[in-house]
Structures are given as C-alpha cells and as structure tokens.
Length: 361
Ligand SMILES: O=C(O)CCC(=O)C(=O)O
Ligand SMILES: [Fe+2]
Picture 1: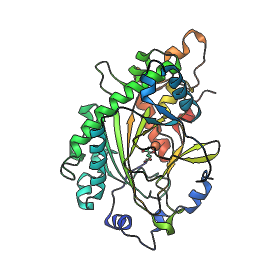
Picture 2 (picture 1 turned 90 degrees about the horizontal axis):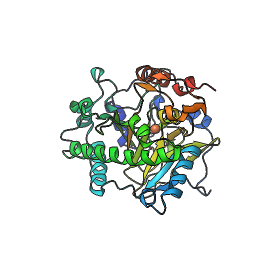
Picture 3 (picture 1 turned 90 degrees about the vertical axis):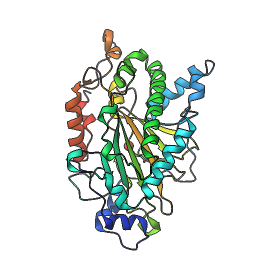
Picture 4 (picture 1 turned 60 degrees about the horizontal axis):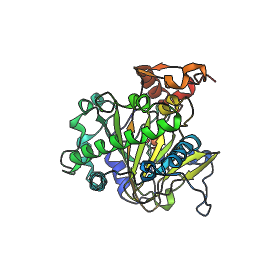
C-alpha cells in the first residue's frame, strides 16, 4: 500500500540547508535518466492556454470552447487565464501556504500524517511500497469537501492563523470555477451540462469530493539536480485538477509524444489537467496526461493542487449519454467507486495505473 511518511528532523535539515551529501533514499539518478528527454529552454512550443473571459463572451465562446476541447483531447493539460477566482482569495491562499511551509518542523508536524487519519496530513507525498525512495518535497494533503469529510485536527490552526479561513474560501472559489469549466467541457463533449456536472456535484451544488495537496519543493542545489525527484511521473486518479503556483519557479513537466514539456507559468493563470476519471467519463475523448515535478537548483517552489472527484450513481464509467443509441461502445468497463478507489491506491503503490485495467480496447 502506498504510504505517506512523516518528515523527520534530518529531512527538514536537508530541505533547509544546502548540503553536500544527501542520503541514498533521495538519489534517483537512474529513474531521472530513464524518464527521457526534456524539451530545451530554447525550443519554442506552446502549451495550450484557455481564456475564461473568452469562454464567457457570447461572440468568442464557440471558438474558445473548441480550443478548450482540443487542449483536453491533445494534451490533457492547459493554463487557464482570466479564470475569475477572487484575487484576494488567491493571494490569501498563496500567502498562507507559503507561510505554513516556512514554519518550523515542529509546527508543521502538529498536523503530521498519522495512522488513524488515513492519507491526510503533512508529510512526504505517497511513497510506493515497492521502493524505499523519497521525493524531494513536503506535502500537506487535506479533504476540503464535502464539509463533513474535513478533519479539522489536521488543518493548521496557528501556523499561520490565516490558513483555515484562506483554504475554506479557496475551496469554494475552486468549486465554483470547476462548475463553470465543466459546463464548457460538456458543450465540447456534446453532453448535457447536467450529466457532466452531476458526476462532480450533488443536487444542492456541493462537491462529491474535493481535496487538496499543497506542495513545497525545496531548492536542491546544482549538485543534486538530475538526482532528485519532486514528484515522479503519474496521472491524477480523480476527475479534474486545478493547480495554483504560488511563485514563478518552473518545475512541472507534461509528457507528450515521448518528451517532457515544461510548463512555463503564466502570471495569474491556473493550470488545469484532466484526471483518469474524466478520461473514463468522456469515454476516452479527453486524455489524462502523465506529469512530474523536477526540483529547481536555486529556487524553492510552492503549489496548491486541488482535485475534484467524480462518479455517476456510485460507479466510475463513461457518461451514459455518450453511449446512448449505440453510436459508441464503452472504451472502459464500469467499476464501482469503492473498487475504483481501492484499485487506484493499490496500483499506485505498485507504480502502475488502475485506468489501464479498465480499458476494453
Ligand atoms: O506541484 C505540481 O506542480 C504538481 C502536483 C501534482 O502533480 C499533484 O499533486 O498531483
Ligand atoms: Fe498530479
């Protein structure tokens, strides 16, 4: 089972001071090399950019929706500009998360992962049982919606004091934005908005499942670059991910056509990516892309990844509207949500993808 380990004093010291030698558990040179080539600094390429103001503009909406659709089909990734998330709410969450990671280890470990609280809390990202390697990163993972799923014991109360309010507010903002975005995705997929929205939200508008991973990737120094990993290559197992980058440090890379494409953060934009469940819902029209994080030699990087979960009547399966009338066959077999979650966790621990086992062709 993929576990999340607590961060020790030794690791925290490693992350704060520039050290000459790092423990074997962080050295993954072979893995980094095997992962393949990165598109160079000097090469021009454009990761898709989608503009929410254009989506909402009656004159521009149709062409921007087509752009959104092609981004989800070709890349599974795009940067979203003019997204309309309240600027003060954005600033508050950025400041609060940066401040949390700057706190002393003792304060951060007040909300550390612990056996009885499942995967939530502060610690390392998932560590596969099949390897003893650790990521060059620290992560605070929390369930944010539905509200009754929150474990407030693991929400920082004082480090910093603004944290809880900032996350609560951001959770609502991202829920609203996800809802808006899904409306345009439904138009692109040719399904009713109610069908797609109903997979993510319950009748009264609450998210079926929203969670957040806040990441800090410390600077790794020139000497350790190409040896350490921020997050190893993976796809997101839930529905849709919206990522906020609290600074302009690069690090996120997306896999396409056998190479890694660095995301060059646009000021104020959010990065959106299609998760495995969305790939299934869309019957494979949208693709969940492999991505990873590479630590920067000189600069730390802080991000807030918010995930929305989705399913229809307790089942992860292609949207019925897409299969109606026998026009298309299901490219994924239907699987109960409980089985999906258990399967994803188990396959993740083994370094695989549960999604692959659902494919029918
Ligand atoms: O921090 C990032 O840029 C990406 C984080 C991520 O991929 C994840 O939390 O699943
Ligand atoms: Fe991810």
